[in-house]
Length: 283
Image (cartoon, rainbow, N blue to C red):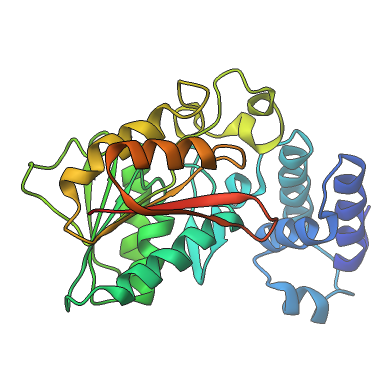
């Protein structure tokens, strides 16, 4: 029987390492924290205390879930993104660090807008990560977001309520909820962009995430093209569309934007050096 919290933490770390975790120490702390209700500093301070039987059982159950490959965000029901702590459910894509580049560039676009209350739209919001990060950083914006999934929108609304952020969430596919006269100062989206036959969909965390939030037709470009083709009529003159896409899709996205009449089209690289974000501006 595990004698101390420190020993239980080591046991969890060893199990996760054997299961192939890339961050076994961090994940062990997160799981033990969830099992005991103690944060990292408390685990350290109380490391020589003995865990209760219920704490051991809960830690074992959580670790077993992770050993099967279930995402740590789903097990904990939480994910840190930008400066926010977000609730996460299997109905949503798990926010990734590379998407923070999209937030950074959207903030720059908001700051370049001359209107006091820029209208900002997030298409396919999922957990609400992008639009909530933007609203938290720039409270003066009029924040709007869409998603086709009612379950995803429930999670996004719950996150907005928990954070005290005012965002209008609308159910519908991409720009379908809007009238032709509805226009925005910034439109941003991280749509599905993985090819349906990509083998990565059967590996790692992707196995547990909603397929409709990951895969798109036309070798992963279908939803990107749909947004590019329809967003112009909802952008004010001089307003940008910012899209996240796959590491090898930047050229295709730029070509489509240029064909549709966007100007100042450019792609930006993420911290790994991949062209991850493409921006085009309404003429």
